[in-house]
Image (cartoon, helix red, strand yellow):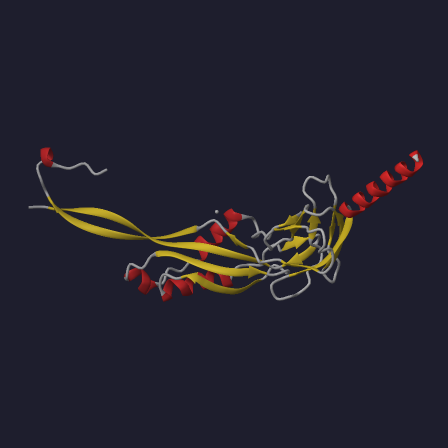
Length: 239
């Protein structure tokens, strides 16, 4: 009798454990349905338990129902997925593109404004008082700022018209580090938009982003501030 109870207990325990330790299988793709290889998949707090997707984007991992799988891939938004007890196969994960916003760059051009003022007695005078390697511009952010400041050609007509403001340019650094598909996401004026696009299009190649040693495309937004620095100079009118 004791052996029977012991056998029953072990059988129930084994069934209980097997119901909570099972293999989950699925596929990871991007928004266009292209399989993503090398996606990091792990269980938070599991002390290193995890896996990566194969070349066709498929994965298999041992986990318990209701645990959370985290999916990480450079250039994509992190994707947490809570597992279910029955849905163990044909899991489909679609990772969305992550847009990285760079520090804004301010570009100034100086204009001298002369003000003519009348001579007054001294007593009446006023006193005026931005597991993986992210893409990187060659030399870093400071070099990017230097490139933009030295390469800028403030459009003459825009300068004369007093046009200034912040232009947002969205672009992709591809797996080779090249800039492509720049487009305006926030416009100020046709002249300033065109100059902002030119600055991005003529950038040198970046150090590309990598995931497990493989180059990947990454999306960026660069805010460029066009600012006219007004330098007021007073010219005394002699009586």
